Image (tube, rainbow, N blue to C red; front, top):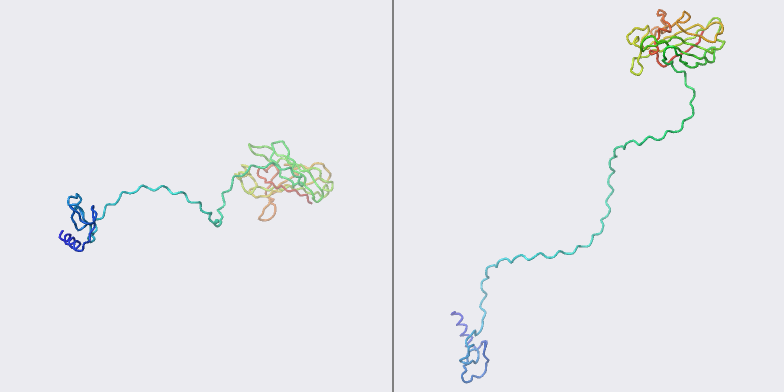
Amino acid sequence: MRKFFSLLLIISLAQVGITYAAETGTAALGERDYIFGLSQASDVNLNQVLFLLAGKDGEPGVAGRDGIDGIDGINGINGINGINGVDGLNGIDGINGIDGIDGRDGRDGRDGTDGAQGPIGAAGRDAAGTTTTLGTFTKSSCTENADVTFQSEFIDPGAFIYDKIKVENVDTNCFTTPQKLIAVYFKIWNIDTADNPVSDKLRNGLTQYTYRDTIRCTREIPSSFQTLITFDSDADSECKIFDSATSSYDLSVVMTLNDIYTRDVNDYIGFEIYE
């Protein structure tokens, strides 16, 4: 307050002031000349705020409290679509997939043309009393061809033996003196298998021959022409076993055609006519 009044005194001496609520001019009756101009002594506004003089800056006040959060702004509009990127490089090849299931079988093709005549087949395993035509062998020493037929005989359950071999249509050139021989060769199976089971006799070692043996049965051709030549168990025919150790036929083994079981012979049977 002391500073304030000192300041008023200085301003009053310099006659500088600011009029508030009264006009300035020549003092009239009932008026007084105040430092801020002429005013009625009875004026109600007399001596109200005379003037305002700014003092030096005060110290900063304490920080005010944070205002409340404003409400969220509205969503912006979508941006425009970007341009497509450049194509990427080709990837490496994938691994092969698993094989698919087989398709349905196609329709059968047309029958092909008949093939050439095959070689003579082996004798079949027929029931007792029946015959099997083996075929025709050709290009022998004295005949161009001959028809050969085998006949089997049933002797035991599941067992057949060779009963007869019949040879027909032999050329007259084969009926000579000295007499020629006609031979039939039988090859015995190498082993006993489920697909080609041998006879119980061979399996149990009760035959005169064994596995892998070759048997040759021979018969003389009559000197006079005959339409039929027959192999059987008579004295005119005999069978021998080939001895591989000596490369000759074992003459000590005496056999006939009836000693050979049809199941023991493989698919190869040979023929020969010689002197």
